[in-house]
Length: 389
Image (cartoon, rainbow, N blue to C red; front, side, top):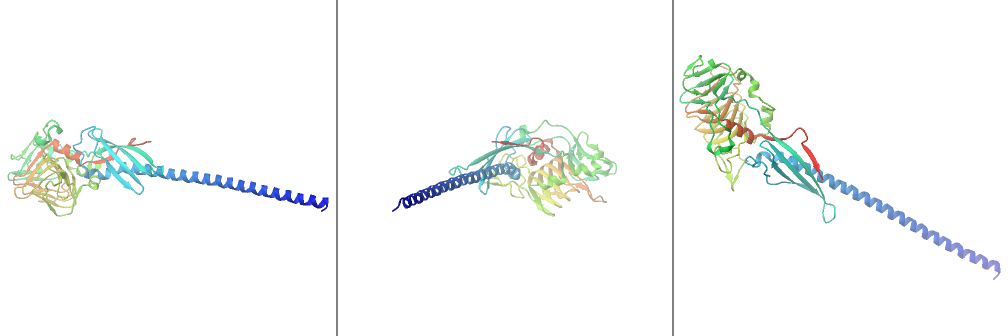
């Protein structure tokens, strides 16, 4: 072999070694780039996953706080002392859950702390977010300056009585303010009262109060029976706990199941003066037409689109607002609190008439408790919501 051939073979082997090294370096660079890309992709995936988990936790925390509003009417809360916390409310959504705890801050305000959780602690993806909400009771401002307020006319007959002297049931005890005196009957034109004689506004012994008759020009105004401060007829009926169809005949009575007041029954209107499970349950009842109370007992706020007829000794404590007239049958019944009759249909013989042994007596305590216990919960307008970590 010549020297030239030997040199050529050595040069070829050198070139093959350089190519192999170049290939190895290229493979290493590709591997490094692939690892880097995988690392970046994995980081992006984890960040996206974690952000989604945190969003789900925050969203379910918000949902848990607002879910308190949905449960409010059916959750026992009326007797909760200031500073005490209600039992926790749980909310389950897909892949997330929340626990809300609501504390009474004052007689009319509540504070909710809702903690939302999403993800899995085993996979190290668990995320928690906490929000807090301030709520208040939306209390209607019902002008009840007399036991009975009528827009047009009223007839009292038999043993019917309208009494403005304040009263309260013994079971309410310290919940009631001091007793005050008020008018028995308020109306714009007292000559529209028939109490023994008609057309002179005379008092034939069936109306008592301080004074018995009160001339109140606002009693003739329709908004008196439709607008109640920040609340209206529409806003109240929108969250009614009990809705009755037109022509309903009801005998309300407290219903207790397994020691708990059954707030799902439309004939359960609480237990006025009772000390049992339904003693503080006072629903907002909306009768979408005429309604007859045939005996029984209940409490709360009763809104009637048509006429209300009381019979068979029915008893009701709270606020009664009727768009048209209040009537009684037979022995009638008893209302403690305040009654407002809007006389929507004004015609001869079409007006409020109380007969038998019907008693309408003012009770400031019954009015206040009924409005408070039946009020809906709403977020405060300023700074209602705040996030926690």
